[in-house]
Amino acid sequence: MILFSAADFLRVLLAFLFVFLALPLIAEGHRLWRGEPFTYGAQVSAPLVLRAFVRASFAAEAAGLLLGRVKLCLPGVIIAACLVACVRGMWVARRNRLGSSEAGSQAVWNPLLSFLDDRASVSLSSQLDVFTLRSPRLSQHVRLFGCLIGLTLLAGIWTPLRQARFDHEQTYLRAVSLGALTQAQTSAPDGSVAFLAPLVSFSGLNAAPVVRFTGPILATVALLLVAFSASRIRAKSAVAVFALILFAGLLFSWANGNWELLPASVAAVYAIAAIAIAPFSLRDGVLAAVVALMIAPRAWLVLLVCGLSLLVLFALARAPIRSKPFRIASLATIVGFVALLHYQHAKGPAQVYQYESAARACEEIGRRFHRNEWLVVSPFHELACTYGQGWHVELSDFVSKFNIDQVSRSDFEFPYESQHVFFFVERRPLRVGPHLAAAGVSWHYAPAESEDWSAYLYGDPLGRASLEYRTAELLTAYGSSHSNLAVFYADENLVVFTLRHTPGT
Image 1 (cartoon, rainbow, N blue to C red):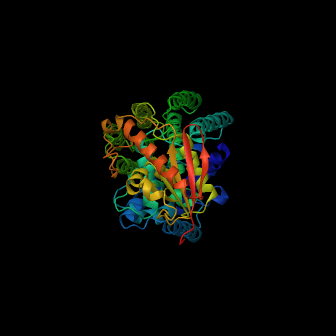
Image 2: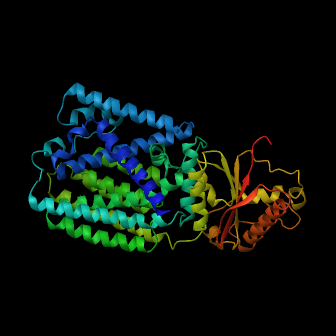
Image 3: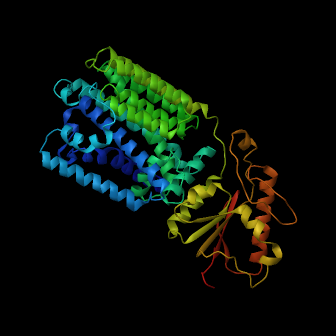
């Protein structure tokens, strides 16, 4: 299972690098096949790459929200738009015949970003000769820093590789929202996942693994941003020292099970990006702050830190590199990272909302059967793992629709048109606990209409136990008179039954 998860992570990582790094750089006129902009040196290429990341995130977030409103956020539309951006960027680079991407960048982006005057920013092109550092000692620090970043990413993805389920109820909701957005089934898209729509298109995965692996990737991006700001305070040993400290901090954070980034934490990443890029370009700093606002408008602490820092930088934006404003920006970035860790730990302890075997069974079904040819009957949380690949029916709807006398007849057939139907039955009903109402999460489930019950919630221990027992009764009665019901998976906690059903029979 870990090998399959590792393959999914690589697909998400490659899609992330293409969408948020390669694509915007090509669209701005950079010729990556000739080493642009990375041949400029670490201290010059970093702002260019950060600017590309911010602009790609803004474009993905805005496009996701707008296309979601008209139910056109489909993979074909997203891929076509990205290809148009690449072709236009290469055309601009060829037409202008520039070794630098500034003119190409202006040609592509200025019509979109002309609402904000950027004359107060420090020009990136003016830094190419002044700020290029290639000393052997710095190269050693860069290699050390790269190793630490790699170890941090590995530490971050270790839990998602071994664990397919989510630890927070809101993450299930975000996965469902992303699945609905990319399937054009929603008119009110969720801003916390709109920018992830291109990753679903280019990775070819459903929403659950995309949400699952982008948390560690974005947290590693936050580490990169803070280390970049630390290098502006002092260009030598400070990079390695800060990287070691932040590496230890992230390990401590993830060791407590908080590997999932909720909307407030994702907004904190873009708030840090806004503060980090603002000394180079106020326009892009504002864009990053707007992305943070669209992702989590209620994350007032992160947005407050970001806004105050941007105001300070706006007043000091004309200062030269390595002056006091740059150091203020670096410290402000570190404060933003502290806010990120605060939101990481403020989410509370991890909760069990789904058996791990249930999430793994959904992944196995998705790999073995064709898309949209299978259906899962289970509680809500399996919906996040099946959205975009198969169909899902609520277990409460199932038990309220059928009775034992009905399913035990030999001529009875379940009215499901999918070729393969899977029933998830918990041998040990999962005790989710009554904290769902306290967290402000409310669910609406169809009540069971049989003579034995009136209504229940999946989070109620007695209601869930009764629900699972009733499901087992129905399947036992059906299996006593039918031969097309078999066991697909079983362990001490869960049994997955499969119904071999041929449509039209």
